[in-house]
Length: 149
Image (cartoon, rainbow, N blue to C red; front, top):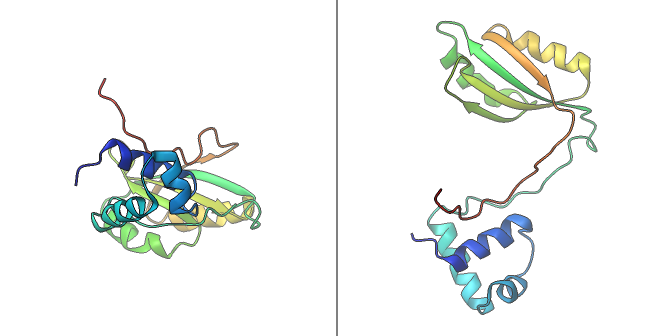
């Protein structure tokens, strides 16, 4: 499916606030509300829009610590880790990556003790490196059409 400029504007609106009405989006992008609804349906059907989610504050839910943890898996431990990682409630996002490490995870934890216990579980799979997040500089930046360099 081709993503034309109007679809890009609709996608930007939805990424900023997925709960806004089709009428509000229509006013911003310059088409009718039914046209917005039809375009959104087509974007969903094409798999471009994968879903709609609530943004939940980890801090306000009692998770005082956010960290980025990389894992360099031991020989033969990458596949078992990949099968297990979705069972860890602490993991918000997990990516298999290139480079010295195999895995990078974004995790939320209650406190330092929780972090220690979580790392103790991870070290059976490989060598970890932990980076505690101090603040969020760019948060949920909308994906927009990028012009070629």
